[in-house]
Image (cartoon, rainbow, N blue to C red):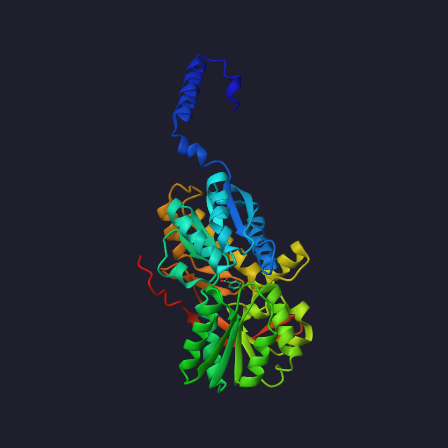
Length: 398
Ligand code: PHB
């Protein structure tokens, strides 16, 4: 029945009831109405420099999940803000303030570089802004700096590195050399590798370093040739990984000294690395050809949307959005219920293209680490290197 067609004596009563209802709405706490607007997501990612493609793919993955959900999470519109962090730790505090103070975002999503992410974690803790980290593996973030409002959809630097150490050990490597950038991701990666290798009696005999994002590898490659280790372990990613793998090959080392690394060395880089990367073994929490309905559907959807192949960074962005979606669903989109939301984001089992994973109390994925081999333009699954690997979360007190 159409209420405006009331003509009986009940009409004044109905009008009064309507007025009362309207008054109640006006009197409702502002917080309830504020929750009706969009959820503001602040992407702080590298859109320039050696990690630019990583940042881009993380954003694409995140947006894909939201798009698949009809552009809303828990019934709320999503609004995006963006800052290019340039993988520059010295600008990180100012950059994150743009999102927290100027744009007043509800959720920070970032970043790739561990040094920048450490500054983000401090700012997120101080302002109690929810932070979802879709890549940077800095151990401290899920160690001494751990917080209920910080969760990672990716890995800790220790995880794939430790697994590669175990694999190298099982292949009989006794004397290894390492080469990386001297910032948190590189140094933690090398440490994790050494820990895994030492389990079978192997050792890192020499660590080579250069400043981020340098790519002057020649003198260091000459030193590797002189030392003749059983294997080399290397952490580089993005544009620099392309150059390193090609330089290693061009120096004639690939035929004599196997080059190992966490999968970042060959993820999102294979078209550019070409023949130089073929046959390389790496460890990571993702492999391109995981033949599961979840991974196949994800890769198809990603390829259709972006006319490009998904990589591990796309997966981590997608899963960052899945974790946020789970948190929002638990509080029906009401971000004022932050404690309940934080707790829900720790409890979720994420149905990821990488396979299902859980989140540790410290906020880091507990996940299988795969051994992969480069074949053409793909990192193909070979075996599970370490099952359900949890970061040790040293120093996290929650
Ligand atoms: C990091 O800085 O933590 C980092 C950067 C790029 C990667 C992986 C880790 O591919």
